[in-house]
Image 1 (cartoon, rainbow, N blue to C red):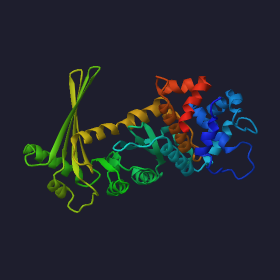
Image 2 (cartoon, rainbow, N blue to C red; image 1 turned 180 degrees about the vertical axis):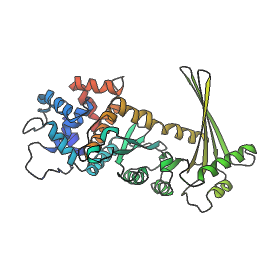
Image 3 (cartoon, rainbow, N blue to C red; image 1 turned 90 degrees about the horizontal axis):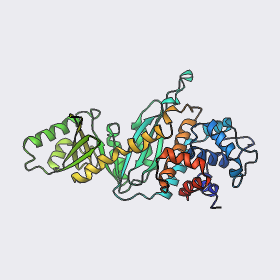
Image 4 (tube, rainbow, N blue to C red; image 1 turned 135 degrees about the vertical axis):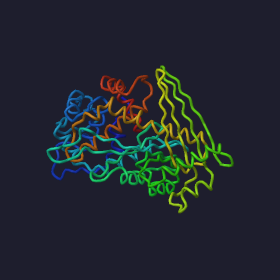
Length: 379
């Protein structure tokens, strides 16, 4: 038999403090191991994790102590509801750093997602909102953090950035994260930023729009700029994306006369024109960035940002049914979100099965040999 998965799981998650203060019937590492394996194999609730554990009791018995058998779903729910989410997050981030060294220049996309069914109206508890960081080249969830119930992503993003290693990477964030403090933190971490603009920064969005309008009016004459165009055609859809950057110091000084934006070196404009069935729509977006102004680099960063929607949020909804999950007791919802991210990272790292994440989950549930192969990414 290959190396026991409990060894690697214990190495990464064995240091988490057991929140139970009395004599326990089930070891914490057994509970965490069964939960990780259950979520990999298609379990989306504590009841399903218990049933998975019962079905695989003989297999788990080969490498877990299980002093009182497989824990009940109530035990799983109670323990993960009490488990310190910060400790669980920290263990998760250390594990990701150990298995996936970030390549220089890759995009780290940061975005939030609401767990829609995690609310409890009876207790006045709102649905939780998780902010996640996604490494585009490695296709890994790097970390996640729950936003404060009375706050929003603005407070969670700096805390998440402080947890991550972003050196030599490009951090992309939508307009909610377009904040001077966030830009400063990214530069302090030796990364670069591409921040989307909307109307949440005074006149910055309008000023950037006016600058590009003026530059285009004079045909960018004597204005330091760059341009890149990308064309995608697929299944009756034609999309043309045009990217302009302005890196002219005079324009940047006019836009930011008090140097509020640490490291600001260029502004970006994206014009996305999409044609489907002879109907054409156009969307224009504006950005500020610490990049040099190379339009190809800027275009690749903007494009890579959308992976967090397509490769993370969409997969969590479709393959893991995250939006249907009713888990809500204590810290259980955010801890279960971490279990999903652990499972997703492991399933993406296993490449021998040429199928989607949902099919990989089913295969891992059917084949213990394949489950061990998925778990090997922990080592």
